[in-house]
Length: 105
Image 1 (tube, one colour):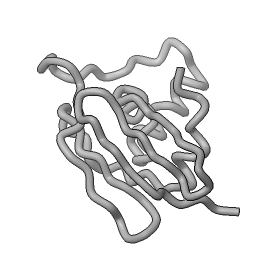
Image 2: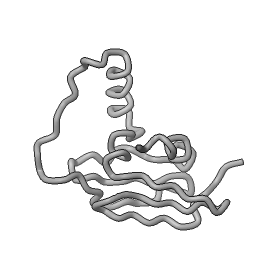
Image 3: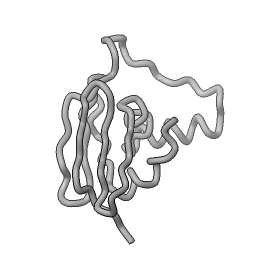
């Protein structure tokens, strides 16, 4: 049965906490959300790394710690987060967030 957010709390310098409608909650650090972005670009990079652990990962120019600049709801099914490194193309569906919830660690 799908779960939907009852409450969403984004701490731009720390992470995203979601309280689900079944009373459970999930926490995602900003770095983990950026790493697990569902954007095509990030998904492709994760697949390359899985196939070849020596794959070269492009580095972002140093501009201080990674933070979330903001977020917006996408319909009733997802949230889009804008990161300080310029990335903003990942749309995190509630389903996807539940799939990755217990892997942050």
